[in-house]
Amino acid sequence: MTYAEAIQFLYSLRLFGAKFGLENTFKLAALAGHPQEKLSFIHVAGTNGKGSTCAMLEGIYRASGLRTGLFTSPHLVSFRERIQTNRRLISENEVVRLVAELQPLLNQFPADHHPTFFEVVTVMALKFFAEQKCGLVIWETGLGGRLDATNIVTPLASVITNIAFDHEQWLGGTLEKIAAEKAGIIKPEIPVVTATDEPEAFAVIEKVARERNAPLINVGQASRLSPIKKTQKSETGATPVLPLSGEHQKINATLALATVEILQKKIPVTDEKIRAGLSGVNWPGRLQLIQGPTGKKILLDGAHNVAGAKVLREALRNGAPGPDSACLKDEPSRAEAMPGVPITLILGILQDKDWQHICETLAPLAARIFTVPVASERTANADDLATACHASNPSAEILACANLAGALNKSADEDFVVITGSLYLVGEALELLGLSPAAESERGLNEWSVAAQPASTGR
Image (cartoon, helix red, strand yellow):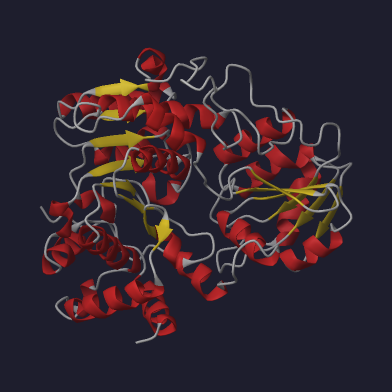
């Protein structure tokens, strides 16, 4: 089997859609030798900020000397981004081997209950991390939590970043229902840390934690828990700096620090290692600023829901984020990248997102707007996006483009361009801008649709 053939096999699993439930994942993991029982986890759920929080936690524990596993989704360009050890992408050869080893196990499932793409990839990751003898796995949920395939593990700590509206058609149309799905990762007597600030959502998390006797930490209390105070100096006199831009990253960093603190007795980490881990954290596509040789700046941000769009709006109002933003300093992160320069917006959104409100949130910020289709079968129509943007900003110059390449060409002379609306669009931009090797066939693996009603938990 070649790597291309392995990717094609994973593509074929998309035919089975996404089935909510744990039965298949438990069975496939059992057939693979129960790899999850050989590993320790921090399980991370939430609406936004999961990936950034995972990246921070991974950086801290890797700096402390642990061999780390990192499981995240979706990928921006390469499928291999989803499974990393010590922030090194799984190799093509290992992907081929794992696919070949799991293929025969799939024959033990009935045709009408075949494991899905995400279920197979989840067990691939578990098997790989166990073989790699990872000391700790940072484990991000795919969708929701309660019935997500990742929920077959018992972690050292559960983390719920926040609760906002997204995937309502599958998780529920209220914050309470969405919170109940996310809170499904809470395990009996296992501590849970959250940054949820919506009262109705937090009430659900608090209730589930109480019922399961799980210690609950809200990062509103984290200022007294965090091993690094915002103004604390290291032994070298340097203030801790997080190289991720945006005020919201302060919350994610505080959440990560509170998680590290609550696990100090199980996994001790010194302040210096925490600083080292945070200072080296990298998470592309989230307020990622790119500067060309001519001074042109392009900001990439996967603001794929209304809450994410609001975060981006606030960051732009504060001045375009730059690479030197000090997110753990007392002063606000306001990197003066392009003060006073008009914004050109390239916007592509998926149809199943609340694209009207995303347009309403972002369009008023821009002088020129290019709407584009996302390279996805779920894309919103670029003309519809243009109409929605015009309603919110009739004075802007707005043009619907056939594709992202065309929009980049039309904005070539602009000083400051923001590309946003979907992580899929950001991944395509990374390829077109030459910042990541092209892997269009692998970006398509992010596509999914729900194929069945929630199944039983398998327990």
